[in-house]
Amino acid sequence: MNVLLVGKGGREHAIAWKLAQSTHLGTLLVAPGNPGTAPIGENVPIDIADIEGLLHLAKKRRIDLTVVGPEAPLAAGIVDRFTEMEYPIFGPTSAAARIESSKIFAKELMLHIGVPTAPAKNFNHYEDAAEHVKSLEPPIVIKADGLAAGKGVIVARSQQEALDALSRQLVESQFGRAGHRVLVEQYMEGREISVFGFVDGRRISTLIAACDYKRAGDGDTGPNTGGMGSYSQPSQNLWNDQMEHEVRTAIMEPVVQGLMDMGNPYKGVLYAGLMITTQGPKVVEFNCRLGDPETQVVLPRLRSDLLEVMQGAAEGNLGDGTLDWDPRSCVGVVIASGGYPNDYGTGYPIDGLEKVNPTVNLFHADTKISENPNGRSRYVTAGGRILTVSALGISRSAAREAAYRQADQIRFTNSYYRRDIAADE
Image 1 (cartoon, rainbow, N blue to C red):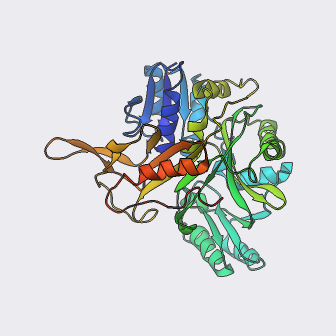
Image 2: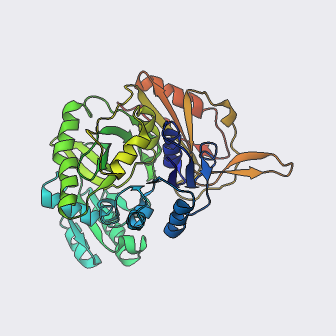
Image 3: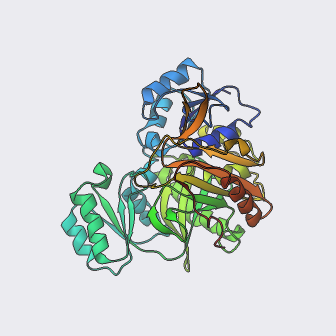
């Protein structure tokens, strides 16, 4: 099978790495890809937003299946367009992708079908939202309705902080159209986990769970980021057979059925961000794709053929959906540029990549290849999150030790990473 993978981050490098292990894979194209995907497949410089350009590439290169990594092209309708032209594609339609692209849509769906989640109200105008906030006890959660690059959720510790967040979104248009409507949501106490399942429109595969770390600093301090690390599997008190059954029957299956009943069958990966509360699991949010950096710790544990699974989901035929998972733990540590997620420099040479232990995976995100005056090429930084170091181990502590041993070998100007990934259970 000839496969086109859309995306350019660490998630897409991990997907490309796993797809390359399939005995069914012929040619693998990655658009636009990154220096990590280049040795695995063929990088093609087409932007993820250029749906017509991607469709032309699929036609020209006789692509049998297109796999979409990031959420933006899914929300923009890439699946609808490819399906219209009868090109097989893995991912939800734009209508089904509203489970992520509109937090208000997702919340209303959950409340309508009885999926456990926090009570919330949505607002278009600052005055109405502010009046409601003044009636609440903090913490208060403010969410931009649309896609805001992972920055659209604010946990306000005071009413004034919540009012300031509302003003930035509804008055100052901090997130543009994405923040023109907001959810004001009740805060939930508990431990957050990410749960993933492949969906073929009706059936859901075996579920897999991971924990990720959003804050920039150790001890969950500092600003929110796209993710500073992750591990899989969570401990037994968070994730076990009973919890998987409860999440499947109370959350995942009702949502998939609800979308089908609306005429928007969901195909692709359904990602539930859950809070494990004293009342049981409740939904924080849904995403319409694999997570980043969770993908970098989930796919190394997948023993099943990823291409077969994605093809089955795209064709509406997952079979019984049983997936084979490696029982070992996997820990991923993100190495980032100093200043991220705010201001940071780029173009810094990355040292230590030649010292990679063959049992550890280095998934590239924001890197590029630069040639210096003497003609030698080397990897340099090109953004905020540079690499994810991902390691398997017979225990979480063994995986953690291997990941950090490798991370300690990698250096560039102002590099930093959290030291407490997978250390809190």
